Image 1 (cartoon, helix red, strand yellow):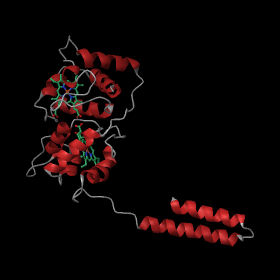
Image 2 (cartoon, protein in one colour):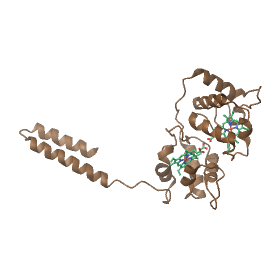
Image 3 (cartoon, helix red, strand yellow):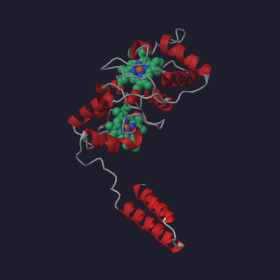
Image 4 (cartoon, rainbow, N blue to C red):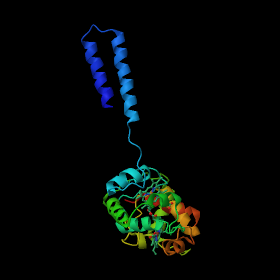
Length: 234
Ligand code: HEC
Ligand code: HEC
C-alpha cells in the first residue's frame, strides 16, 4: 500500500512540475507493478501448528483463521472463544487431543489436528488468553417468535416435557458458572445448534452425559429457538 501511495505522490508531483511526457508516467507505473510483484514473492509462509511459539503467536497464527485473533469468530460454524472461562477452554483443548492414536474424548478432526502439537502449558495459556479477550456482540436473528420461544426455554425449561432450564447451569445471563458450566452468551446460533445435535446423538459426550439428558426430550424447533436466543444474550 505504502509503495503505491508514494509513487502516486511522485506522479502527482511530477505532473505539477510540467512539462512531462506520457512515457515518464508509464515508466513510473511500471515501477509500481515491479515493486508489487517483489512484495508478493517475499510474503511470509503461513504458520504451521508444529512451530514452537508464544501464546499470542499461536492464537494469532494458527487459530486466528477460524476463531479470529481476539477469539471473536466471524464464521458461524466456528465458535467464538472470547470471554469464555479459561478452565473450560483448556479442558476442551485437552479433550480434542488424540492419545496413542485413540479417538479423542471430544471428536473433531479439524480441532484434533490443531491441538496435536500443543503442550499442557500452551493449552493453559490459550485458555487464559481467550478468557481475557472481550466478547463482541454477534449476529442475532430477527425472528421474534423464535427468540420468544427460546427465551422461555432458556429461563424456565419446558415443564410439560421435563426439559430443565438452561439458566440453572449456564446462568441467567448465559455467563456460565466456572469451572464446569461454559458461558453461552452471544455464541453463534449455528455452532450452538450443531453442539446440541452432537450431544443429543452422543457423538459429543465429554460432559458426562449431562447435556444428553437435557436434550433427550427437546424438539427440533426448541433446539433452534434456544440456539437463536443464546446468540442474543449479552
Ligand atoms: C480450520 C478451522 C479451525 C482452526 C484453525 C482452529 N479451530 Fe478451534 N474449532 C474449530 C471448529 C469447527 C470447532 C468446533 C468443533 C466441534 O464441532 O466440536 C472448534 C472448536 C474449538 C474449541 C471449543 C470451543 C467450545 O466452545 O467448546 C476451542 C477451545 C478451540 N476450537 C480452540 C482453538 C485453538 C486454540 C486453535 C489454534 C491452536 C484453534 N481452535 C484452531 C475450527 C478451527
Ligand atoms: C444440569 C446442568 C446443565 C443444564 C440444565 C444445561 N447444561 Fe448445557 N452444559 C452443561 C455442561 C456440564 C456442559 C459442558 C461440558 C464440557 O464440555 O465440559 C454444557 C455444555 C453446553 C454447550 C456447549 C458449549 C460450547 O461452547 O461448546 C451448549 C451449547 C449447552 N450446554 C447448551 C445448553 C442449553 C441450550 C441448555 C438448556 C436447554 C443447557 N445447556 C442446559 C450443563 C448443563
